[in-house]
Structure formats: C-alpha cells, structure tokens
Image 1: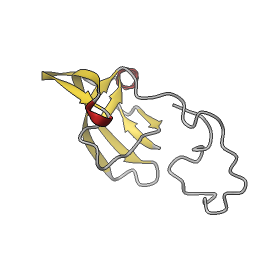
Image 2 (image 1 turned 90 degrees about the horizontal axis):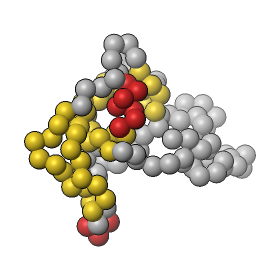
Image 3 (image 1 turned 90 degrees about the vertical axis):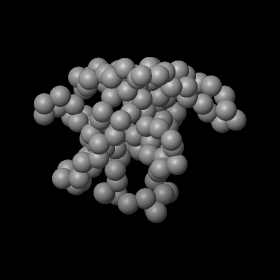
Image 4 (image 1 turned 30 degrees about the horizontal axis):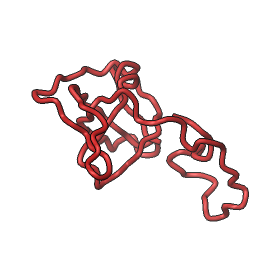
Length: 119
C-alpha cells in the first residue's frame, strides 16, 4: 500500500503491484479520475501483451503519478503510467486466515489489511 498523490494536497492510500521486471507501469482510468490527474495522449497507441505475446489491450493515454510510502513520506517516486480500463478485481478473492502465520509481523506492513479482499 502506498500513497498516490493527486491534485493539490489530495492523496489516496492504494494497493499496488510492484514488479521490477515489468516494462511498463499501469493505473486504472477510475483512479486517474478520482485523483484529478491530467491525461496525456500517447503519440502512438501502445499494445500491451501478456504471457506468450497474447495482446490484452491497446493503450492511448498515460498519466504522471507520484507515489510515496505510508511510512516515509519524504521519499517520492514519479512514474509515467499507462491508463487502462481496469487492472484487476478484489485481491485476495476471499479473506485469508492468518492466525497461524507467525512469520508475518503485527505492525509495519505496507498493507496491514493484506489478508482482506480489496481493489
């Protein structure tokens, strides 16, 4: 969970999927709207492919986003993200029973409610 900055002082705590091997970053169209971010039209539409080269979307817009940690707000990361209709659903799909997960700390998690479904 990170803070995504919007217009003015607005920011939202958002679940994110961080993948350092991904070629691109993505943001849902609804989050761009909620944050009041400026949409930038791409000079050339970009085709997004999944496993085995399967085409999943053609992207025509991007947005500049700024991310910051919930625990260290002085570190700000700026990213250009491609705008997609949606990224996924509720994850996890059902609540996880974590009572026997002694290896998970009680405090300091980026997403303390990771075990509950959410967008």
